[in-house]
Length: 304
Image (cartoon, rainbow, N blue to C red; front, side, top):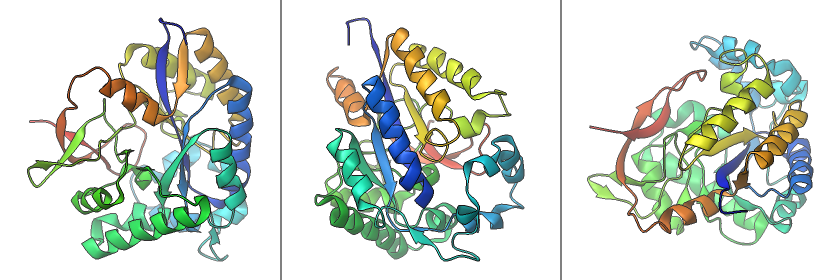
């Protein structure tokens, strides 16, 4: 990078078996062609994506499925996974792909044990259930990678005091459990935790398509503008989308970013640059809010 370049934290979420099997290799090829590194967050356990059908009556869910042309993104096997058809494992079933991520120089962390169960049920989980989900994901990651994870990212950007507190046991470099504007230290019970949060700061493709932008390239153009203005921008892409039917748009985005002097980097690199400023990370209590284009609530820092 030159002195005038800007960094963009690049986060890649892997939510399904097909996303791991086909989306991740596609993204690895795209990133290699452009000299880009990112942070992959892997769901380790069962792909029960089919249970999303039970969200049909939640406000905004069907509209999102239509806007994002979900039929193009998810195979019939995925749509039925965990319902009519048995759930397939994700990270545990495809260890060679997980290890390829590491071998090609990317950062890799844990996204979930059971993504769907966390996304739909966290609000009703006991503290013991939260701990069990995180521990199972941690153990599966160690089994596949051979080393403990240094970062976690909560499914659907949903965290609570129990998950934030339990993560302290893992010696993480950071977590990425929420939406926000800049890295910060979460506060639980009046005390700041040791694990920094590196939030997603920018909209995602599935939130924007058909809502604020009719086409993927229009969305990515807006991301370039926003990334050029933000101090610590983080973009989340999904193996199922940008590693699937929108892979060509992802290639185009990385080409345009390079021309604009915006360099995609793993989240740990963005956090290191932030800490190198010498300015202490702000302390923030976590709460919940909404973001345009996404049904349901997400975790985010609260002010006041």
